[in-house]
Amino acid sequence: MADGGHLAYGRHLLADIADTSADVLNDGEALARALTEAALAEGTTVLGTIRHAFEPTGVTVLLLLAESHVSLHTYPDEGRAFFDAFTCGERCEPINIFRRFALTSALGTYRIIHCERGEAGKR
Image (cartoon, rainbow, N blue to C red; front, top):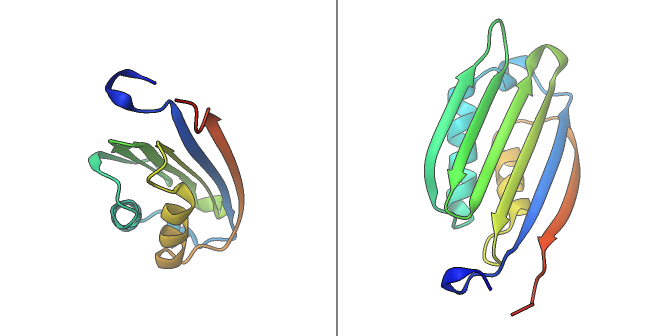
């Protein structure tokens, strides 16, 4: 156990997003809002948000969570984006964050990769 009684365990979700409107993928404000709302609905604690718009297009949004992080990197000209969510402990599910985000963000198709990190159940 790490100091404070927390297990060094978490779940990581990666999503490759395709076939999504350039307008959706270039709206950093709406994407940051949707990511934040999805993370909060899953019960995470959002400690901070960083949003950066690239020229001529593209956005990166990072949410620093008490439980770890959520990130999104968009490529509007290609209709693609990469989503990443990692949550430590057993309380929050990154798949739920992604599902909520996908439902409110008019995403096209996506491929999801899950992995567990650390060792669950070892005390």
